[in-house]
Length: 543
Image 1 (cartoon, rainbow, N blue to C red):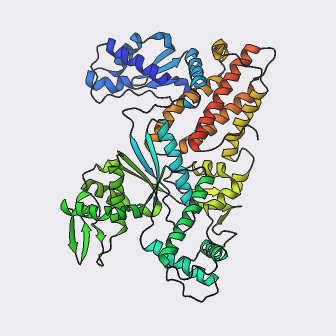
Image 2: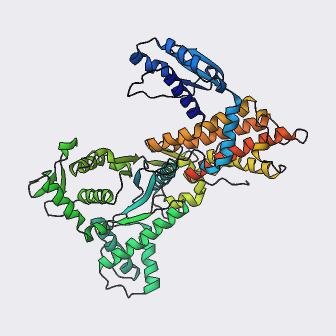
Image 3: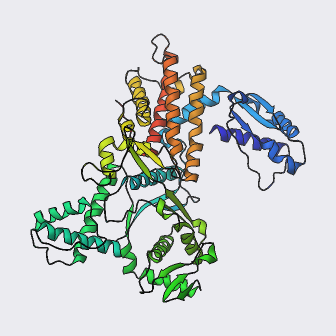
């Protein structure tokens, strides 16, 4: 990578100068905001001034004097001691060769001893109803983050936690049985706080069609399991249509079969992190920074969901994961401190757990907020949104905002075939490149192409943008976000359209320039495909 070449050159220069570097020294190579200040810049001289007890401009001058000048067209010292680098074009041309050679592995870090084993839990929708549009946002975000982390060399397991125990799924079983009996024509009281959704009525009708009245004497526990299986199949089908897959579905019932919840309770008791009050058992979460202690066993001796969640996270760590990443809904913000406190009480670092709180999605159409499904008169499901605008538009637009921000999803915009639609704009750039390459003459090997002809500002700007991608992917992996990649793809597409509108690519009178520019746009095609792979968005060859 170009930045690494510059960094290595500076470090070698500091060694030649016999500078003693402080333990906390970090050599940063940045792109100046003002392009007249060079291609790259470093504040190394200022960072070293205190430890070396020298004026930063003096240090900068000494670094400039000893640097390998063959890499640079020019080196300037600016301000308090910034060193600005203007690169020779051959470095950008070597980068182009690297992209063509590495293809979709461009910037990828291979897995190795330093790779973290990450459990990424996301979606985890209770199997009591279909996925709504906010669930879909967390699904897309989690899947894309997993792709990014894997590109950064981490080992990721995508996991879905199925709450198949407790009062909510009991109510599902009771509600389904009531709907089934009603479908048979019987008058039955519907459970208080039961599930009234049309999806359950539809399923009950299917059960009647398939089994007649043979299930009428089955217990609600049997209906509960039937309902769980049905809802999980619906959820899995929906996830598949969104191009989201999981390595493992972990069922809460597995914890109870292994008595893991009670074992976790006993561990907390044995370590002195619990107390009893009014017949309930409290976890001393305030000892670890929570705002209040939390009930883990209620007065009626029933375990709380929180205790099961603690047991589940302990199970993950016992399976050998060294980093747990959870994407939870906006209503789970209060769980952050208590869950980190629980891990600390069990002897793990709170930093072992990273919690991402996904914010809400608002659907709009023709400027009006859409709340109800046309089909059922209830909430719009994630599946309905995918069916209306397509998987690619859903995924791309969902990823245009940080997970910390609410998202307004304009349905009409998502269906437009114009540059106003961000996913269409990027996909069109890719399809346009594919069309050019289809009509191009057979290209020689890149080593036989005169890339030195690529000197136009638009050409170098494209290569600069391509150079920035690996670092951006690292940033996304560190921040557990993906919206920077959607913005990057739009910016790269804009650079391509500007270049193509200004410069001729296919020119029978200048084959050398034609081949050089064909490789340039081939590199853009590779980068757009790579971003599509990370975002889970297809890049069509024709539109």
